[in-house]
Length: 221
Ligand code: CA
Picture 1 (cartoon, protein in one colour):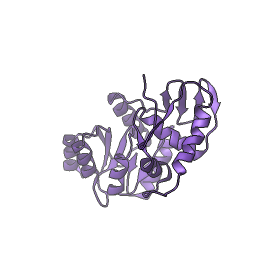
Picture 2: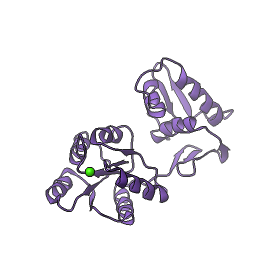
Picture 3: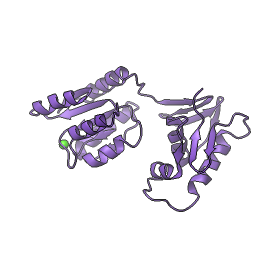
Picture 4: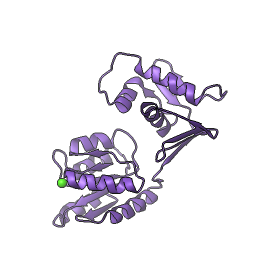
């Protein structure tokens, strides 16, 4: 995830990272950036320091206060020596001084995700179900499964945290970006659809209903 308020730099970052196979989500200000960072697990956060609203250092401080160990790379201006030092003290994993080459950022991202034991993960696996986030290919026991964009997103959210129950409201927020309960059985309908495609006739059901709470994908053995 990237938080950068200068649109030109943001679009340069997104293009450069996507060309290398990264999936990028971007926020234009600090408050949205913090909301994004706490909404789901990312492999790495690239935070500009000077931002409208909450600045990059505040985002970092708030993440660390909440014990969120997301790897963080700060983007700083040449003059921001004190901020850079403060950032490292607050638990930033690395920093980069503007202007920089995209290759430099990519090298730092690989370094911090390796250090964090992360994978820069592009393939999610639960039992014999695999999802490739780059090619968007989903397979169960080697058999290709075709999903629509929403179905893919719903399954991705379940697969990112096996065993964790997602409520209908959480699913609505993440997959449809509603911050309200649409008062329909939208989620249940989509769960049924992906269940049909993913579990089908297989005796090993991966998608579980937790009555009165929500849904989850079977925890890893
Ligand atoms: Ca800025």
